[in-house]
Amino acid sequence: MRNIIITIILGIIVVLCTSCNTLEKELPTHELVGATAIVDEQTALTALNGVYAYLQYDYAQSSIFTPAFSYEYSVAGALMGGLLMGGQRYTFDRALRTFTVPETDNILPNFYKLLYRIVNAANNVIYYTELLPETKISIDKKAEIIAEARFLRGFAHFWFMKIHCYFWDINSIYGPILRHEPTSIKNLIIPRSTVREGYESVLADYDNCIEFGPEKHTSVFKICRTAAKAFKAEALMMRGEGSDFANALILTNEVITSADFLLETTYTNVFLQSNDYKPNRETIFSRALSAACIAECLTHPTSQSPYGVTSYANGSTSSVYTITTEGGGYYKSLIEADARYAATWGEETVTSGNPPVAKTGMTMRKIWRSNADCPSYIMRLAQMYIMKAEALARTGANVTDIIAPLNVLRLRSGNPALAAANYPNTDAGKAALMESILNEYVLELGYENSSEWFAMVRIKDEAGNRLISKFNTYFSTDEQMCLPIPYDDIVTNKGVLVQNPTLPL
Image 1 (cartoon, one colour):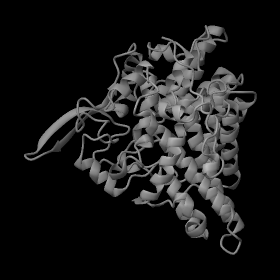
Image 2 (image 1 turned 90 degrees about the vertical axis):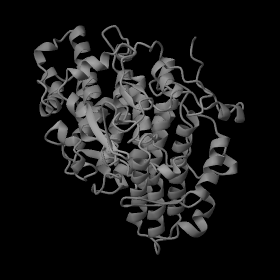
Image 3 (image 1 turned 60 degrees about the horizontal axis):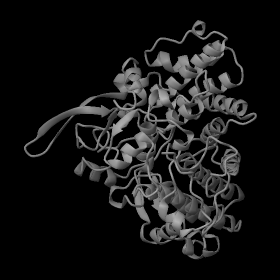
């Protein structure tokens, strides 16, 4: 962890100005924040935008503004969940599919660094905005900026839990490294928190945003109170303790019935290029791409970018992700029989070169765009409908009520409605119903934000086995469900930072 935090502090000094749609991309260094950067409301807003900036992808500065929230995190869940194969990261992508990522893999630090860049930048905004006097910022605006920064801190901590921690075991000691104040030499090395403490920290940050964040949704690139409710519902569903499912049900209903977001009338409309990034529609939260980044992706069509890895029409045959035939191939049979297949996968044609040559290839249509402005669905409204169904099932609702939100999605996509008669009130019937809920996560949301993977982790068959193995036959033990912490940080922080248990041979 020492190596990564030092890299982050030094790296922020070098990289800090780039534009991304409506967001200013300016993030001052930690050392300069108090003295020259956050001195009033406008500079606090500029610094806050800098925290959001880490969600973007910038081709020219890809070591800092990585493609993590453009495709890497969604790919990780889809690979582990048995949806995809291929990929430009070669051995790392295959290791994800087979649950064999070693702690020495050179890709691991990229995930790690990004999340703590977000955490550190958010903590700077929280700390120094709190110090501003009322003559420089109103009380309400101060609370709103801090609330957004706290959301982003919780969001990054939660993704660390999703990737590197035993998120499925509330009593586990293998939780996140929680940072709640700006990084300094004094607090550079700290131990891992427990999983319970991790969830409590994330939920506290989300709650603060729900209470004090922006009241109205204005952009898919910014968070608001309703959007924070969606993310809190997701965290509660993953923790799954006590009244969590009942509270998640309340939140999903509030998001669904709010005026901030609107379900598209058809599944195809969700992914129309003309609808990308529109506010007050189905996308709840996304990230922006700058015009310069888009131009670079077009110039380098086989690069490791969302444009380069989602279509054989422009990407290299050795680097594009496609439907897997490994690990049982269950997803392939499921998606090809579903009406959403045509909007999810299909052939596209790209003409390029001199002389011009047309190339046609299988494409992930949800993500790929011919103009390279490939959207990212960090959260969209459809997920609330599926989580509502799962929460209803876990709180003892009747079958008719449980399948109702699923059928909203199925009917708009041209699929037949689920019938209550197919799910009798028996152990087998209940297990079949939970599997149908999981299938909706996979078919509706697959390859968007890894929600299908986390649903596979928590939904089990009648015998109590996780349904991961139905989609990916490489799965055998819970220890495979998270990635190790990078080896260099374990070595550097001897006795303080504890590695996840070694996977059985």
